[in-house]
Structure formats: C-alpha cells, structure tokens
Length: 218
Image 1 (cartoon, rainbow, N blue to C red):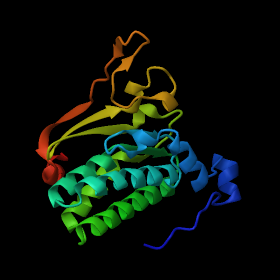
Image 2: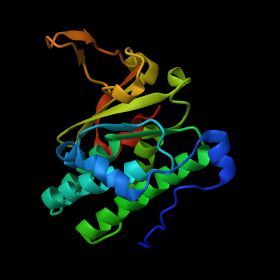
Image 3: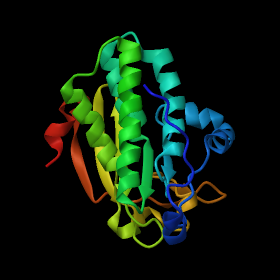
C-alpha cells in the first residue's frame, strides 16, 4: 500500500468555514499512548466526534490489528470474526461528506491489507461487502454538536462467530450533555457504582453468524 502523505489543511476555505484542521500523526500517537491498553484491545470502543479524514480512526485500527494478527492469523473464521469486531468498535462522525467517505475508504484498505498479510490471500467479495457494511454504520455524516438525534449508531457484540446487533440514537446516550465523555452503549455509573441509565435500543436484530450479517439488514 502506498504511504499516504500527511495533510493537516485541505484548504483555507474549509478552515474558515468549518474550522477544519486535521490532527498530525505525531499528536495522534501521543494521545493514544495515554490509553495504550484500551487502544490495543480488539473490542474496546472509541468514538471520534469530528473524525475528519480518519487520522485517529486509522491509528486506533492499526493498534487493534496488531493484537488481532498476533492472536488469530492462523484460522480464517477466527480472523474474519475478530476483524469485524475490531471495525465495529470504532465510531466516527464528521460534518463533511467527503471526509466520511475518505475515512471509510482508509479503514477499508487497512482492513483488507491486514487480511492479505495475515491469511496470504485477498478477502472474497462477500467479506469485503461485510467490511463496507460495518463501516457504513459506524462512520457517519452528521453534526456531533447539534444533530445527535439524527445519528444512529450500531452496537456490535461478538460471541463466538455470532454477532448481536442493536441500533441506538446517539442522543439517547448523551444524558450528560457532553459527547466527549460518552460511554457508548454502556451503563453509566455514579461514584457509588450505581447505575444511572441504560439506553434502550431503537431496533434489535436476531443474533446471526457473522458471514450472514447482510441477510439481516432489513
């Protein structure tokens, strides 16, 4: 894969209109080092509410993939299921459509390359579509400040080779009014470890084998 030239500003107009300045790789890695253990867990969830072209998302996936490749590179089914779990744990929002498309494409290419490096073959077309499907649900265009009710995220839970899927409005989980501290899909607790709320899904899907995930899209 050709190394991508780092870009922090796409245009002065975008900076003026949207305040868009992309975070440099050095800063991204330094920040992720502060949560190193979580960033390397395959199923640990991350949300970037202004993901830009995906600099944070890519760096997080790279760390997860190192764990994935170290543990599951000998069996295709295990690798595929865990790869979908890793992708399903990374969430991004951006106001601009081109950024969302670029973020999805960068994560897609990274996932495909990891598959090829680990299993010594290209993923089949069906599995590539599964990757694209998960990314379409997790990386979304929207306004993370004023449009939370319009952003619907999916919680993916992997048990063996079975995926459980539920959909939530992001506004349901924004009880504290600060998306930067949002614990995706989890029970919020106070200092006494007493549950405050459990968000209810807008829609739940029957558990399904990860390879049949696209059959449950309707």
